[in-house]
Amino acid sequence: MTQPAPPALQPPSERLDPRTRLVITLLLASAFVLILNETIMGVALSHIMSALRIQAATAQWVTTAFMLTMAVVIPVTGFLLQRLSTRTIYCAAMISFSVGTLICAIAPDFGILVGGRVVQAIGTAIMMPLLMTTVMQLVPPLRRGRVMGNISIVMSVAPAIGPAVSGLILSVLDWRGLFWVVLPLVLTMLVIGILRVPNVTEPRKLRLDAPSVGLSGLGFGGLIFGLSSIGESVYHPPAVAPAVPIAVGVVSLVLFVLRQRVLQRTDEALLDLRTFTSRTFTFSVLLMLVLMGALFGTIILLPLYLQDALHLESLQTGLLLVPGGLTMGLLGPIVGRLFDRWGPRPLVVPGCTLVAISMGLMTQLDERSHPGTVLALHVLLSIGLALTFTPLFTSALGSLRPQLYSHGSATIGTVQQLAGAAGTALFVVLMVTRQVTLEATGAPTEAALAEGVSGAFVAGAALAALAIPIAAMIRKPDEVADAPVGH
Image 1 (cartoon, rainbow, N blue to C red):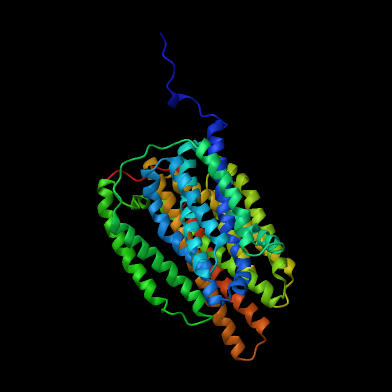
Image 2 (image 1 turned 90 degrees about the vertical axis):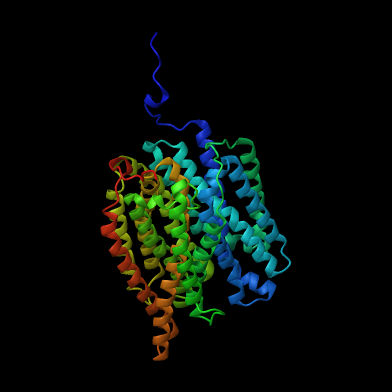
């Protein structure tokens, strides 16, 4: 009797099965709400300062504590995603975020508010690596590009509409209303997850290496804190010189890497660094570091420029930046389909070129520039970034063996946090240094600020230009045999 062909020999389906679509849709929606929550806080800081009677330097801990927690927790997710089942890790992330949101909503003082933000950040840190790892496990290679394009929607649209959503809520509610609006959404997704999320991975019994956790926390936390302090120190003297936490972070990271190299011989590493034996993964992560730094630096500078140099209102500023974010999100699925057909290079090289051109044009902004010009340049920048992020995510993770997907996702998440801190620090320091120098010569504040912003974009354009030759080295995973080999 003729035996049926084994499943592995069946042609891949062009459509995802209903279970896979449900899981990915739920994870995408959850990630969208969690990232949206992270970005709506910026507009609320002045309201929190007024209600709780705190200074700006203190209020910044609402975002700094969140970022620090993300930097400490994300490297551990590589271990968690292998040790726990999919449903368990999803529910843990959503429960943590729900509890943190409730704490923030009822916080009687600033200290408890920061504590709630820390608990929120734990759930957020787990969600994005979980999303990307699950996609790599469930989606066949021929469709990964378009699914990763949907992830790009989450990563770009949520930050883009965050300020506008925040402004709308704050127009009718106080700052606690931000958390009360988010909480029912998160609880609904938690219930759906408990009932419907299947376990798509087989948990492994692994030992959590406590020294690695400590070194990771000191290393990544020290770098994030130090880099954030550089940006803040241009406005007021920090309690600790930024060089101190940065030095602690660098030394801790060196020790962390050495320990992981030993532990990965027995597959016990907290963050398996054999991901970097893939050339495609290494080059993709390097490009992400540069481009994410440019994105976060731009997100910081443009609102300052629009409000303080062009004198736009905060709501006008938020609305002006929405088209760029929406453009990036809407292009995500299209870029994903093009990636599935053509591979990364025809997308990433033009993308980096557009980023360099847009930032080069931003160096010409001054205190007399029209807001429409800023909108057009921001949309151009967003198109360039849209052409790069989906191919880089997909190529990076697709070049790894399946056993390393969770570690690759955790590495990418960690790089995003480092890029955010580094990009913010670089752009702010360059801007303020130039601004202060010009103001000392008697230049008007608006002109000095605009000149400082254009000077910062010179550095951004240079970095983007340097990224172009690296982009030419990114190849589609199925074109290479550079996946890490076993120990």
